[in-house]
Length: 545
Image (cartoon, rainbow, N blue to C red; front, side, top):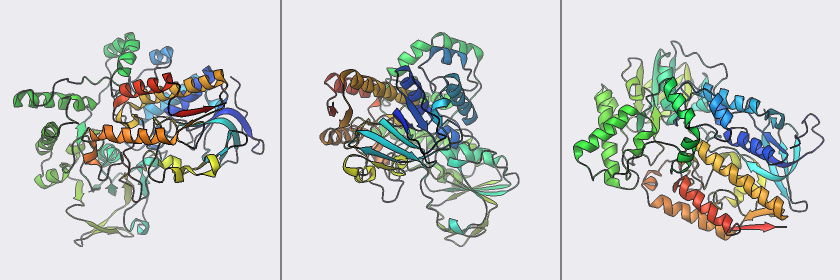
């Protein structure tokens, strides 16, 4: 593969086979695979370093919720043997180091332009090429536009009343300062108790003089039980890594989590409670596999939800605080369950106060702090925002993407994002979407999902090259059918019951078209579906010479 030319002369267009937007897990794997298959490529990323979400989300406590040996690339056996993970759940610094190592080890940096954001991507119908421009003045001409932008890469707009009046420092978990923040002795407000907030708040509490946590919706939080890895355990994994990878690809979630085939009420109350206790003590995402029907049977979900609420009562000493921390109104798992460390225990600290905004609504922030509707005023030295993302589509709509006839992607997705198999969108030829909307993505191990998509993308490009096709494009009918399929599969589960405010459906963004965005059928059924489409001559796609 010939490297993309250096982007020093911005007046000269860069011509490549593929432009890759993003240099996280997806972008790095794409570059490696493209090179192996003889394609020229260039990747752009706005970060100062590779890593995608793991570059930007460097807040204290940031950590993955999938076991490190599974949340890693399986495309190179030497890589997986040589890299040494230190903890069960890798921290942000360790993941950043891993992805930087991958970029160096495979000499990927020569095809990556960092601190460079793609601002527009227009399909030229005359040349059948994508014209891609960046904020650095680069212009690229490419046959393929590969969107490796991530599902959680664009923070949602801040919707905290009066925050613009606050004159102190404001830190967002999604763009944390590289040098960190010293909260020692400070009065700090933390807004948001989703995954980022659950991870950051216990760490901030260890420093802050006073920490006030503003909670809009209580979350189901499962203990991580993170720990350093035992060398004998690591040696066993490495000795059987190929089989572990094969097994992961054969499981719906794309990783090994010891799922129990039994249903919750085919066992006694005592056995069910013991199973929940065992998995609570074991920690992590294995808790979700306690019984096979937790996400499809309301009674089973009620049982596990009641169990978690009972654990909150056991842990949190103040009854009113415990009551506020208990989630109600949606099934456990219908909003993304959070894996955290010392979350509930943190509210037993003398320097931590929970403000339940359902009970004590916020009036507005002020120049020095905030005022509640009951008149209570607070002063803060710093504010931390863990307020979530414009999930799935945010990265797409932040760029000017235009397909056939100059139609914008924002217009094409005005009723919600529509794709065929989560891979392509009608009217946007040769634009491949990697592990995002319309695919298992966030409902599975993201790295496994990414590897699936990268393999299929390059396989399709090879098919086009070998058979003289210039473009591939989803049909309107196929993508309408796929959107319906995604909805129908979700409707067989309890996920729709958590859609009020859920980013799975875009409900956390005012005015955003609501459509269930991830595919809930798991990676195995998803792969079977793709194989059927491919074997039927890429059914639902139009290939043109």
